[in-house]
Image (cartoon, rainbow, N blue to C red; front, side):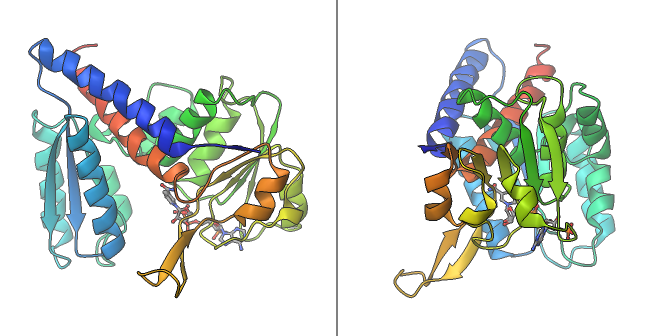
Length: 293
Ligand code: NDP
């Protein structure tokens, strides 16, 4: 078994981006600028946003955090998005999800200019990605594909089972793995809560991507000997032995599954760090377009 070390690969990617920022600034260009819109005080969202701001600063990006109260009206939020769309000092921006119940995610996502949509959630980016055209690819699947590429994992002709069909993880992941390029050229099956014989479907996977949000759901009997296992899940489970009272586990029962797999991502330290690094990568793509590269 080989560990897919998202921490190490994300460091490599971040170092490359930091070098590019230096070069950009050396040529008299301003560094890439990512803005983040946060609504309300969801503790998990605050943690993610802080990590993104810190990651930007560490590699020399500019960041702006726009933090709105939970009761902001949809109309006001949309007008803040309009301003970000028009602001030429900002290369890309994200609206941290989930949004409060009175705001429609879809309306907000569709208001973001596709050229600044570094989360890759806008239907135009999703559609272009599906067609294999130039687009922003959402950060979690984009980061996973980058990790597969950097480890040189063979994908052509393999059976990839994606467990979960959300718009931000499972859906785009399945599209990327069926592209006729590397990484891709897989035969893809998408499994979800209505899938029958789920264990059998998972067992047929050469590459298994688990993104369902159920702690340690994938057990060793669901995994083929030698499979590549990518665990996207981030779940908190109670653990009195930890100071904070919980620990993070993935959607895969790591120890027993690791024994059977050829490659596996740990949680934490696998897909999570790649997601942030890939958001930085998307922001660089937006900045390169600004300076005509
Ligand atoms: P969603 O809740 O949006 O989607 C979950 C998917 O899993 C759905 O398609 C659902 O099926 C399916 N599902 C749920 N229960 C089962 C089950 N028992 N059997 C089969 N399928 C099931 O989750 P996300 O895609 O947003 O996130 C998935 C996980 O990944 C979460 O743990 C999340 O925290 C984590 N995550 C991690 C990131 C990272 O950076 N590492 C980034 C984003 C997410 P159905 O459609 O039928 O309801």
